Length: 113
Picture: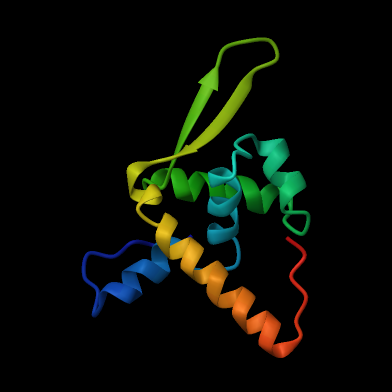
């Protein structure tokens, strides 16, 4: 887990600690698309392991990006939703996707989504 420090030399450094890495933006994207249960996230991100997904979800909850809700039903149901902090990232996530699609088209890269 990227430890959140008290001082940063620039805002991008903090942003990187919050949403950087291989998984967090992908998890956020899937939660925004409505895949809000552990099993649906695991299915939607096939190259992530259960352990890594659990760790990343916990970090994102601790960092205020996701809310975790437990419904006391049988079977127990846990769902994840975005917080207002995470929702403020929506335009940035879409801009990153637009950038990647343009790059892929120009460089003959296939994007499967």
